[in-house]
Image (cartoon, rainbow, N blue to C red; front, side, top):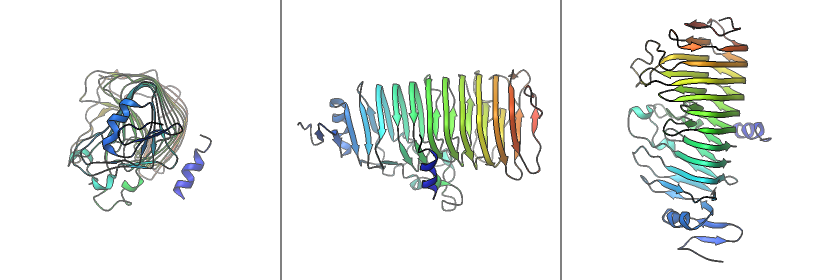
Amino acid sequence: MRSLFVYTLFACFPFIIVSYQTSAEDGCIVKEFEEVDSVINNCKDIILDSLSIPGGKKLILNLNEGTTLTFRGNTSFNFYEWTGPLITISGNNIKVIGGKDSVIDGRGPLWWDGQGPWSSQKPKLFKIQVTNAILDGINIKDCPSLCTIVNGENLVIRNWIIDNLEGDEGVAPENHFAHNTDGINLAIFEPNENVTIENCVIYNQDDCIAIARGKNVTVRNLFCHGSHGLTISGTNSTIEDVLFENSIITMAENGIHVKTHVLDGDGLIKNVVYRNITILDAKNYGISVEQNYLNLPAGQPQDGPPSNHIPIYNLSMQNIYGNVLSGGIPVFILCADEGCFDWKWENVNILGDNQNNNCTGYVPKEYEC
């Protein structure tokens, strides 16, 4: 039933080198991990067909300019305690495609222990560093840890499914659930500019989308379930001109989350718009904006005094509707003195059973907290 719902929701959206196969129709077909390097160096139309990756090995895809690479069948990874990533993709003017019925299976249950990075090592799945690229139709299952780290310019990510539902508490065996499985994370290591993420379905146990660095980023037409929401994660970097729109968030810890890390260096968040977002059954917060975020192991403080070293300018919310579960807070704002400026919120209506909104340090224009 879940798969049917997901696909319905976004339906509108002759030579041989070594031992791998080629044809005029299919290009270079890779069926063994040991063939990958030779193919990557010699072909521009590549199919990875049901590869099994040895434990502790990385599938390195440094693609030649103009390459089209297709994942076909089931790509899987054997167990090894390390941090990964399991796959790296780099290149300019490339296209990476998920073939029909293909799955990239991270085999997360082999690693999950409910503690994420705070216990044994668990590999990140994807690291992507590209320019002028399209990544289309990728189907990921059971990330051991963070699903996708992205650094890109002129990049489109579309029609992805990330399905980590098996890692949910109550679904996974006791003490073997997934933790810190961010869906798509625009990371701080390199600039992210002119990036579009669209028409994706994500079931996971951390941020559905997290933007830690970026300029001219659009995120639209998403369905996120069980996550920590659509997130701006302010660190010692700049995030500006970001649009989240036309998306549904269900059963998340937070529907919308804007956070600044108090232990990081100076940064800036500017011109961020959330519009036409539906938040259903959020557990903790419908909307949470906090300038006191810590990311420490369980049992340690998760927040501190608010700080203005990463100010938030021009945070816009338009047509945000939904509800929080019992005990949840519809809207939570905690700004430091001189930390938040020129926000405008219109048609924001998050319902809750017995908790009022909580706004400290700042109230947006045209909004009654």
